[in-house]
Length: 268
Image (tube, rainbow, N blue to C red; front, side, top):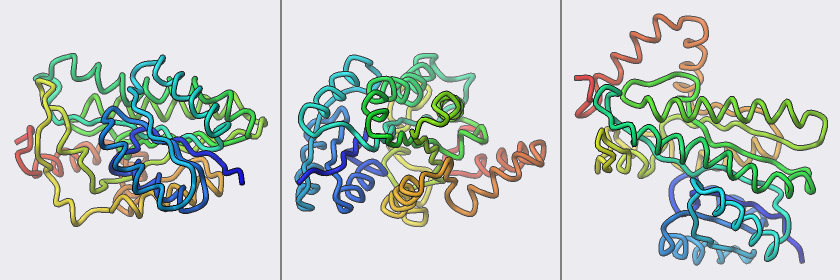
């Protein structure tokens, strides 16, 4: 029995891992990739319980050669991908004036170019299957956030890239989804880079009180299956996007005040 194929970058934790479970549960063969080989194998062991083929393929999306190798392996072992989710990402928490430029460069390399390289490697397969390319962006792609300049810029670039591809491939049957979660419980904030490029080691949020990865994954899966263009999650997220469009000056003040109050805020 053949299975449709879903590829997920950053698939060993957080939203990526939750997406892998959602697609495997729906009968997809799943390929996950990331830099931590042991975490990938642990994730793959759990995913195999669904009874569909699973590949755990270590790699770095910031390297085009790794993305091309991933695509070749998926094609050879599972067949052409029907869904590719560019999910791998990192964050930051430091004022721009204090941040080493290597931090900004790393954010752009992983969050933006990582998605670009993934798209370049897999679009030939998606053209064959008339499949979906999903970019996991953020509300920060709509509204720049203080102390997260590199993160916001990388997500805004990702959204513009997907919009351009959507226009380029208009009428071909390919589908492009820009998915924008709000704050989601994951380790991304613990691993967020400080001004020197080191993991900050703690989250400024109460992780148990924000949206959980499984709920985000379910929403993304449904939006992809419905072939929607965009998905903006949480009431706060949708309100932020709306207010930023119609009252951007007021939003500057609101965003500043909100992030100044968070735990150990660089703005304080």
